[in-house]
Length: 306
Image 1 (cartoon, rainbow, N blue to C red):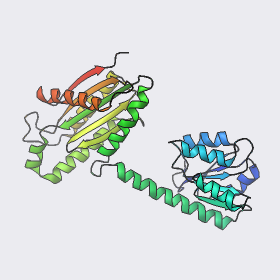
Image 2: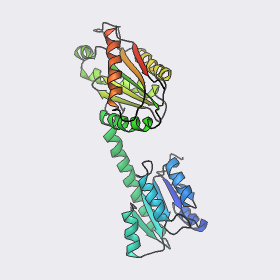
Image 3: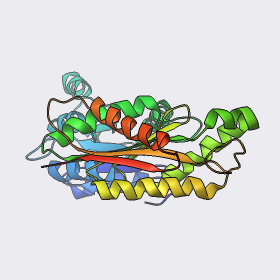
Image 4: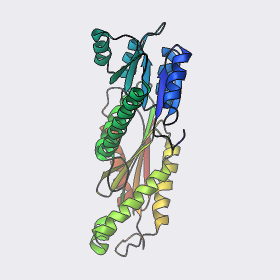
């Protein structure tokens, strides 16, 4: 994707000439994708995640109404705004599209200024909604997910993995003697410490499916779907050594002369009907073991028998 362009538009029309017309109108400002049938449109919507879909109503096979309905039924595509493009001007047809979740209508033959204005409005609205959603799920200090987002992801991922008895690993850790750090260096230094540790977490988890979150205070957590025990331990060690490498002075620590962390790691095989909260409880037990056995270490347990 050209990062200089302010958005991506997926044009769906079974007539190539119509796609060419829309492309001519929009390509100077937006990245353009196109599909000539409903199945390809749904595939591109899932994989490319465009900012807007311009959807022809009258198509052979799967028409625009059916495509829109399927887009709004799927979690991956429900937030993508749709503008119907149609030669029909009947009020009932327009109402039907809006009831299915379309944001607007453009009638054929199209007017370039109208197309540009309506596309611009919808993409600006989507970017504003996306920003609000990011703020709602992000910890403002560290840039990691916040506790609310962690809870929502865990509630979603556990039952998804349980359908096939999949693996879920979790890392729960906190900063050693952080109260003493704050008392010694002040809360601004404490905030900077947590911010830098958040950066370590972001570098340690590399898959899109993984989630790093601030659990609360100086406590952090990572959800690692479909990650085995050895893989989770490697990530935990990257976090531990990454925090160590920051070399943030901590004169009041009984562990080292700099900031360290204690980590608990668990790997479970997800089972339908069980609460995902038991994973957090097991990770917390391992974290307690790490702290009670000297801190600046990892304690781990696996519950992943077939």
